[in-house]
Amino acid sequence: MRTHATRVMSAVAAAGALSALVLAGTGAGAVAASASSGTGQTAAAVPADFEPVSASFWSPAQGVALGGVGCAGGNACTARLAVTADGGAHWRFLTAPDVRLFNNAGNGLTQSSAVGGVVFADRLDGWLYGPGLYATHDGGAHWSRIFLGGDIIPSLGGGVATVAASSGSTYAVVSPDPFHGNPDELYKSPAGRNAWARAGRMTATLATFATSGRAAWFAPGAGFSASATHLWATADGVHWHQYPFACPGSYGLASIAAASPSDLVFLCTGESATGHTEKEVLRSANGGKTEHLVGPAPLGGVGGVIAVPPRDSAVITLAAEYFLYRSADGGKTWKTVLFYDGGATWSSLSYVSGTVGSVVVSSAGQWLLRTTDAGLTWHRIAF
Image (cartoon, rainbow, N blue to C red):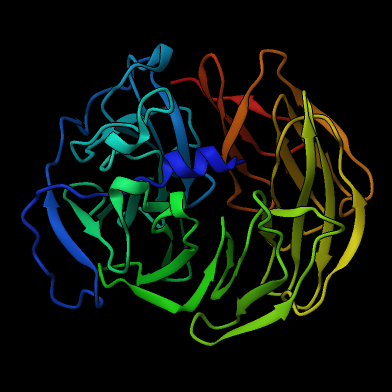
């Protein structure tokens, strides 16, 4: 769930004075520089006060969590990576680049190299992003800082907003200059190396993005009159097609979830007030060529982001401030599965199998929650 202000802060890009090395095979405009390995120790145990901000699992048992120690109260702290091989029962530190976590309490424009999200495609290939971009292709032993081309202006909030990996490819949604309303762009690279280049020539304001296999979708998002009128889709990761798309009324597109290359769920959001946001769910059975309105989602909770298990678009998990909701019938009816009365935002909501998923709770403390029954129950992971 990302408001416009959050997107602006999390889209501050790298503009440092690192000496850059253009790597063989790097895409046009993309530059990579070696990054410090940081202080992470692969054998060190993760302390109980480790606070996750993002998580990524590439199998039901294996995954990583990005976070820090001593970050309470909005304190600036160093990014740390924790890795598990047994579904979160045990964790150890993985080497991370020497970079700070993005601090929402600080000045976003001074955090050009900071990171707030993590994505791993497998045990070797991973990325830290938001607003900077870092890549490893040897399981964290070495990291490179990636500088994407285009018209990115770090001093005006430009940088990487979203990263997703699927079927051997990695995508990055880049906000070049959100303060002046410049639209987002989409970059792509093979997962196993740094060879970034623009994916088509599409642009979108506050872009919403999703992948499933080789298929991907890219569309304007919600907020500041950014209502979607079309959806870009690719079935093979190469050829993009534009289809008409519209949320109900003046709603904006807040989130896309893909259960397969054909089965999609869309979350549209409307007006927000204290403690609630108007929400509507749409579905597509043909890869986004057409869609139909299912009906309203629960009003409670500001904003919203959705996820569905692979090959089961009928099961929808919806995270909104204070709430985790679940639908077992494609969005027709909903059940509250978790309520946090202290207020919370949710990130890294995803499923890695038909039953196993994870979500990070950002509140007074940072929690990693996990489900093994397709969102019926969620359990806090202890570090």
